[in-house]
Length: 145
Image 1 (tube, rainbow, N blue to C red):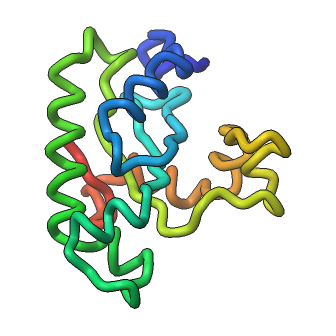
Image 2 (tube, rainbow, N blue to C red; image 1 turned 60 degrees about the vertical axis):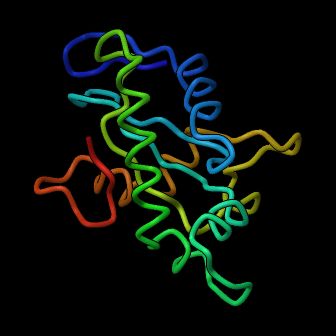
Image 3 (cartoon, helix red, strand yellow; image 1 turned 30 degrees about the vertical axis):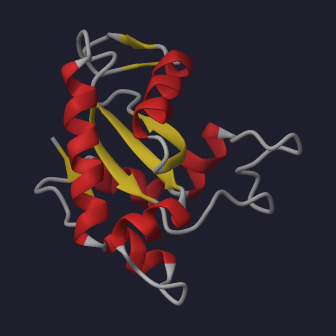
């Protein structure tokens, strides 16, 4: 859990569960960012095969090509907007997301031996991507409300 810059607490566990359920089958996992920030951002680990089918791409398409697909990006943007309609304030409203082409790495400590994601390691290892979530103007790689 963390606090936004407004002092509002974000309860990560329940929000993470709602996010994954809402984005199914396209999101495999998510890491929420936002301590001392104005809003919540999300690093999304997409289900590459579900996104490949959504994009209508062949087996030779790389994860980078798949997550850059206009159809995939539009679907994630639409799902982000509908998730926001269910938010009850800044502590439950994810404002931006970035799709990760590379899955979480066990070697980098991003996954535990039990297969769960280590949020702190992901945020630390992908700090440059977290900064993109909060950059102004919003980079092309980030999907925003």
